[in-house]
Length: 121
Image 1 (cartoon, rainbow, N blue to C red):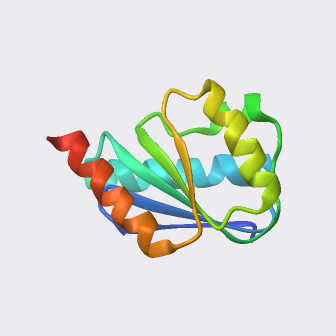
Image 2 (cartoon, one colour; image 1 turned 180 degrees about the vertical axis):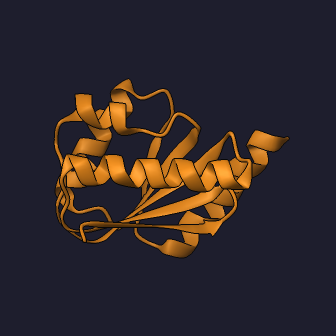
């Protein structure tokens, strides 16, 4: 089970990357998050990737860009492995929304709420 997804609350969705994550796992997590957002009536939302348990992550930035949720305001990454941070920085060069990196989950949730508030203001 390389990814699991959950609704943290409407508008904030978490994909937990576990072990060796493959591209198909990333796309499956994207689809699950889109389903949560549709159920919640959220056109714009925050994606949190929890990399705490990830060992290896996909490195093809071009394909990772295609896996991004179209409704994303931002991707907030918690505890990314080193490879994930490097790929994320490259992702930011081409993505229409930012990927931000944090080591503290409370900081992630505070930032998610800030971004959602800015979106609805």
